[in-house]
Length: 150
Image 1 (cartoon, rainbow, N blue to C red):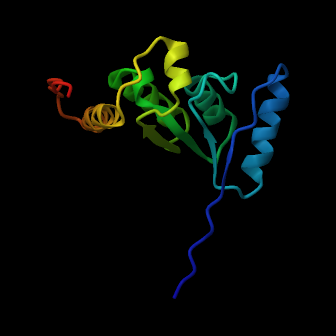
Image 2 (cartoon, rainbow, N blue to C red):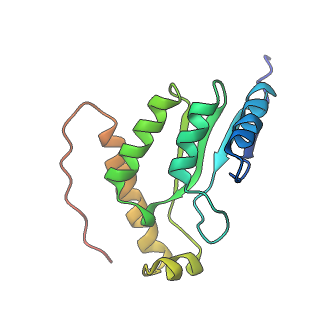
């Protein structure tokens, strides 16, 4: 039985004041044999916007998979998420892995002034967004009518 290669990922190093040093860290990770570098979507812990960070990682590396692990669905409209993901995928030469989640940190919702709905509602919104985002990655026109909330 053929052996599958081991896949490894790390969170991207935090962006500091010395952006050139940060890019050099990414280049070393790119050369290390690591499989992927990921960025999460938490604004109370961490100081980098995940979309901007993923774009910068995409242009600073040549081989590593670039992972959104994960973007919170409720922080962005699905059309905006698609637009950003499509741009990062082009910048990375097709290396983006887009992870989406329903959101779970009540404190971040409160800090952003967003309602923290029940888990089922958040999951329903996520499922609807995934449908829209996947459809936008096709060549077909997308017509979508939002589902009523619970």
